[in-house]
Image: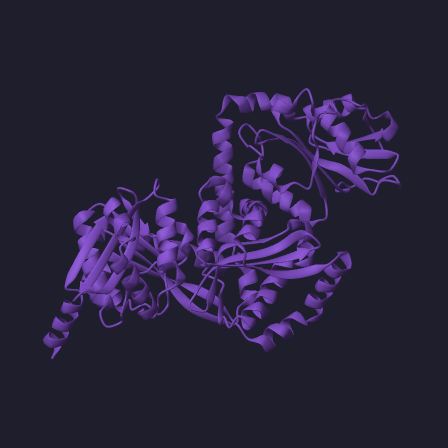
Length: 546
């Protein structure tokens, strides 16, 4: 009986084809393959939108210069019974099609032949790419993967790791109840007092195209401040890819507007009645105290009810806001396929890492301690590398003045009218993203993190940028030093920054900011840095003692 079943399975993957590069690209335009792919996607219980033909082919086309497409397919009597779409980034690494823009990477098959198909596929890939590691992140919870643990042969060559996947199962009553809670209701009312608050579903390509740049800036700013990446700034093809997905009706786009300003959004891939958080979600840091992002997610839940969408997938990853929204949890998995030696090393590293984390928690450390340690180590390493640069030695003499802030003040009538050609922008996230940390004390990560905290604290930002470089920055906010302030001084210019290329015009920038930032007769500023101090004095400021 076992042999008969095995023969049946073997026949269901009778033909196994591997196509690479141009051959793979040609296949995605084949009429038979298009129809069979769509059919297999619908039949596969664990398929996500990231395996949908429109998603994969859009990514292959847009990122053709960066990745080599790889397609493995199984046929049985002219019917597609298995499919795995991959991409090679270099000689030693193969990933699921979509790369880090595909939240879930998995093979398509029917449950009856899934294990046979993926085993044969991995063997075929090993034969053609003997030195490559194959990484699939994340495999959906319903995918049959027990063979990895039960078969000793595959256990030596595969590493499987589980991750908590939070979900918001859409329920109108629970979402309505959440929105009616006192804290949510108060935040909505505060926003409404500032203007017209409106939730919108974006369906027209022209409208989506008109807002994508603004959303990209908000997204890059938040990601830069929290995890030190700028997806759109670092990847010039990402915008084109997102637009292609929208055009293919694979994207579900919603925004929350205050008057004409977008204060939150979610642009998520959608398929099989799910919306996935993967894509981009944003909120304006200017309104952070009102939690526009969380409010938008809940309003999106109500919109999903109207559209008969069932699940908002918050995707794997430990974030407090996800736990606050989730009402159900499942598991997703990562799969690494490589040589037994490489897999053994990875498994040992994983065990040691978890052991260290457990010791830290036992010692009373916070759950985020390990992540915080890695962040600190990265920043220290970056600063050490920067300090090996000779320009840093010059910067020491150029910047440092004292360990204590020096307070300056100026009568607005005595502010000198200097170079009026300088364009001072207010509250520009795009300018802040153009901070270059080469030769600076603060890394870009620290600078953007500090900027986000200042916005959340209610400070206003003034910037001067040119040709994609932040030349100067100033913040207007409450006094942060322990001195007796004059009665008229509720706010002070602080966080003053000037790039070395701004010297010669920095005084003009500070003078312009002083005039823009205050209607009072006297404006105050503080700094520790020598070149800022000189520029303040040139602009008409004088040091002040209280």
